[in-house]
Amino acid sequence: MGQNILEVDKLNKVYPNGTHALKRVSFNVKKGEFLVVIGLSGSGKSTLLRCINRLHEPTTGTISFEGNNITNIKGKPLRSLRSRIGMIFQHFNLIPRKTVLTNVLTGTLSKTGVFNSIFGIFSEADKKKALELIELVGLTGKENRRADNLSGGQQQRVAIARALMQNPSILLADEPVASLDPATSHSVMQYLKKVNEELGVTIVCNLHFLSLVREYATHVIALKDGNLIYEGSPSEIDENWFQTIYGEDAVEVTID
Amino acid sequence: MSNSEAITLNQEKAGLKHMKRVVAAMAIDIFLWAYTLLVSYKVIYQKMIADIRYAEFSWNQPVYALAIGALVALGLFLFGRLSIGRATQGLYESDDSKSVTTEPFMLLGYFIIFITFVAGLNISQVSMREFFSEAGLLGAKRIFTALFHPNFGILEQAIFAAIETIYMAFIATVIALPFAFLFGFFAARNLMNSSPLLFALYNLTRFFLNITRSIEPLVWAIIFSVWVGIGPFAGMLALCLHSVSSLAKLYSEQIENISEGPIEAMTATGAHHIQIIWFGVVPQIVLPYLSFTIYRWDINVRMATVIGLVGGGGIGTMLMQYQGLAKWNEVGLLAITIAAIVWIMDWSSSRIRESIK
Image (tube, rainbow over all chains, first blue to last red; front, side, top):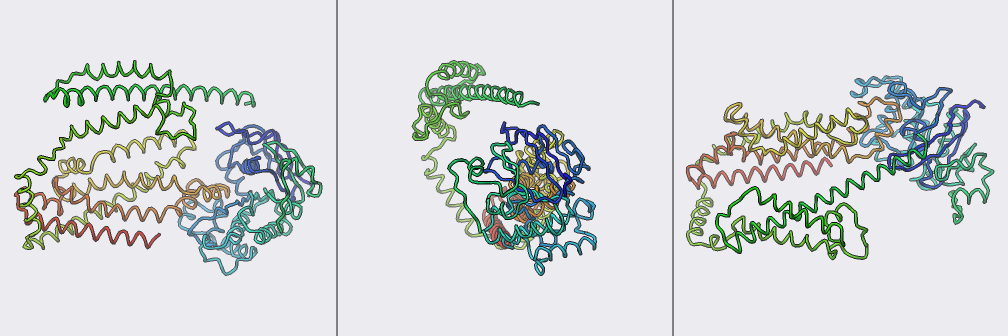
């Protein structure tokens, strides 16, 4: 703890259609943190996450990961960077019609040769690890089920196992529970907490519900119209801050 | 790039876009007015009102029409809501409470549809008198009687020819498959817009596919029958070429419609571009591809009968020979055989496609 794993400095993102999604956003993420990003839909949360692993290209500003400037890398270095950053998504983004095991194994694609992966040849060590991770997310026995036949919560857990397969030092979670029901949401958040505390993976997570933020986050930043307007601990977000972030008419909805 | 620079750049882009739209709107208006004038004069006036059988045509006429059309269009472009071009380019503010059909610019639209319909009737020489003429009805009766008394003596021959046709269609589909598979990726916009080089390749592929698809298989069959000689091989090549371009088009549209999620997820794992396609794209398209391919085989069997007409072999060639000799009883049998294969293929392919959904 204490060391910065990720440093974002004056990050700007302007989309080709003119939308200014991020405006001079700067913050640091410490190793082992569970950082939660909050804000309204369209405030730039998803863009921010996707700039970190360069799924979207930042317009200006710099991003440093483990001390290296990664704002402009391309090709193989970029792929190797992405392999050290896991990511899970609101809609899980699993590969349809493939088994749970295959889906988890796709987490090793960057280390598996193109030729081998096309013929589905993964190393025994990778397979063993995939089975262990399936056990970790509580899906033992479902290895050979088609991933798209699982429930939403189970699919998200497959996605977590896939991300962990990369041995990530940081895990990006883009609204991981936004399409799940309250009970399942907590279960998925519990798994993320476990990953954070037991495996020591730093987590950067977009969330909507403040109740979840208070329960799981160790640090919070808030975005509004692309500006970073709050940075601090989750307990400091009081009524005033809530209305600044979500607008005057907002009423807090809890999830439990 | 600073923020203010980005904003001015966007404004410039918007201005340029507006200019482009105005020019496009003008071009549309000029074309529509020129068309209206030309058709009104050539067909409505000369053919129908003045009843001139062989109206003279000179290239001056369309040029004059274009010039007058341009004047009228320019005149109307500036005033009121009379310009269709402006409407199609979104240069009018639309009032949601009013239906488009009551807008003033639709008047010209209705008129164009009307004169096109009238001119169309005139040009296709629609005549009820000939349809119900005595000689015509007698001929129809003769041919229908023969068709309904098919000659079963050539059944064996017809079945062999039909089998040849089915195999020809199958081989054409199978050979077309790998090419279409490859071109499908190159013709998918969402995979090819990441770099200028890929985008150029995309445009080149699209161009090639559009050209080969817009030439009828019948024409390709003629070309190949000169190239490799009359027979099933020429027909197969023609079907094959047309299948490549049609399938590649369908495949690429399927790729363009897939969900971006798995692609994003695979990109985020640090996978290579080929791995992203193999794991993020291919699993989403395999079944629709299979379905399209089976459907294409079905279409190819139907087309193979047509291609036989130009010497492409199979049952089509047989049909052409007998109709050339005016042997309508034999033609009747062949027509039944073709209908039977088409029906069987249609039924089985739809059953197969349903079961793999």
